[in-house]
Length: 263
Image 1 (cartoon, rainbow, N blue to C red):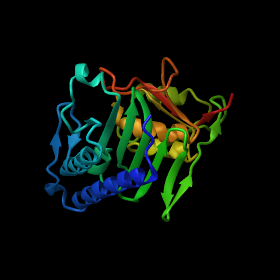
Image 2: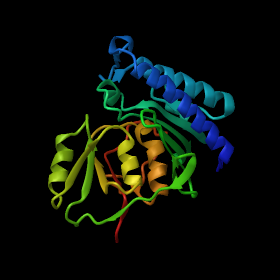
Image 3: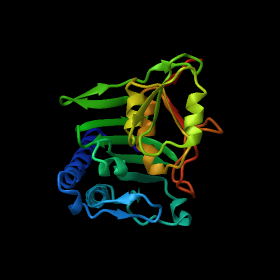
């Protein structure tokens, strides 16, 4: 397994922060300047997505030329080629583009390193508040706060308890997810956009995030290792096993993201 050094992690941090500055330069302009488009799947694409993607992909390719990149905004190599990757980067250069368009600030940059289907490093950066989270397998999960790395932890919970703090998507809440939430014991529902939902779990601010709707691997890869190292999990809804990456189909199955479940 590749073990990134602290200097490697700080370099990736700087890459994310530079990409975040590019995103904010677009965010602060009039919407007419965003070059807003609709992709084939009807999701939005802006100049901010494109600029962030260019900064991240060029920097990673420069410093780690041997590691291929899978990004939401890049041409994806066919699985016949990808299946032989030992390592790859999984990138979402602007996670939560709908939230960006709605100007609510709930968007982030996701950068993950995957080894044979398992995430071994993840970094998430929220440009508006400049919050930065990272984790490496076996080394804990951290939030950069006032120049120091502060360890973060998920809360313990039970599915049977009253008042579970349940996260849901601000822009993608589906009827099946709503029905599940309503089956819980007096849940407290909390809406939040992008991968910041997973960071709320990793910091003990919520208990579960059920997702019975479509997501892509770049939406969850970086958050997964951060949440795992904080004591939580992202589990396939059916198998109850951790999500896997660089699959033939880059769509995720339905999943349950959660804090530390009491046994």
